[in-house]
Length: 108
Image (cartoon, rainbow, N blue to C red):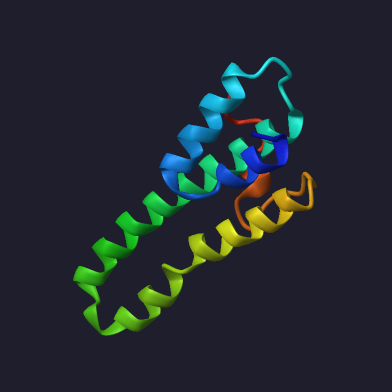
């Protein structure tokens, strides 16, 4: 798998991230592009889980806002698409909202 393809696969669910991570770990040349996008993708995954928990709790308290919570739950999907586009362009730009926060946080 090429570095570009590995960076793209990292954004496709947690299983894709694990496949990309294992591919990165066994490769001889540790591409900074792949490492950067693995970090960004795990940030999106953690953000998605936290958002799901928070919105689930708030939905129980405020069921009238279900439509709003549904729209907010699309945020990780949009961030994932933005990450895939950035990875396919072989650029290392942070994802909006959470990208700067997760840069350098994970030791891959």
